[in-house]
Image (cartoon, rainbow, N blue to C red):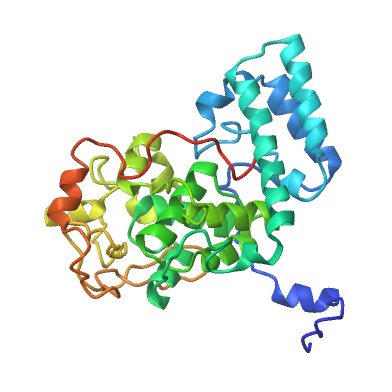
Length: 358
């Protein structure tokens, strides 16, 4: 069917033809079966908050990535208007009155305030929300790197935490808050690719997409807010929040037999370990995309991974390319990893409140 004009409402047949095929087997791997409507939304609220009593420990579990109850996951219903933020607020206040008021109950309410914050910012900024420089508080130059962007979008960067999160989103329409912060930081700050490309991918795949939260958070992740820039050290984040590698193995089947000590940095595997685990870097799993800070040590030559991210089958680029041309102003790999000797992220000082969703 011909594409409708900009002023026409697209017919159902045209929308269906444009739809993204869903893999039922991958969908089963998702954290939750999201069903639309107010009834399903209220079932989720009642079940998570009261029946399973998960709110009391929300602050401790909210950075998880596997399982249905590490966070509220109210965001898809909030975004679609199936659940009112006032309903969530008053339910949390009821929980505080009847059970316990602690940091976790405070934190859930605080997330609702962040949600409002981005809506007010959207009203204030209007069209500036979609400019490459945001409000213009910070000057940034973005790199044209189609291969790097495609690898990121399809979950074939060779950096397991990034790949696992992108594959989860493409397969299920959901990604954890911790995952969103990491993949956004990686695209905008490590690869220096225009943050709006990442925001557009999120817009396409996320069930809980809304313009204010999505574009506002992406601009903040790209360092355009004029304040502190939070750059995430991907290997460290991986080890902090997925110590056993269960999450990355769940979404990156190529890594299922990789020993724990290498699963977050597979390029460090000796050749004999790659062979015994059935995961040859650059062949079975992509070699890592080089970032602006430093190329990973070990296997970083060319070659293509099998690319088992959703839908694209035959794989992303195998890393090892450097579209930035070896900028001498960037720290060398020796300097970069020396800065990591303390185990701290370069620019991530203290944990910040989650802004993506409640």
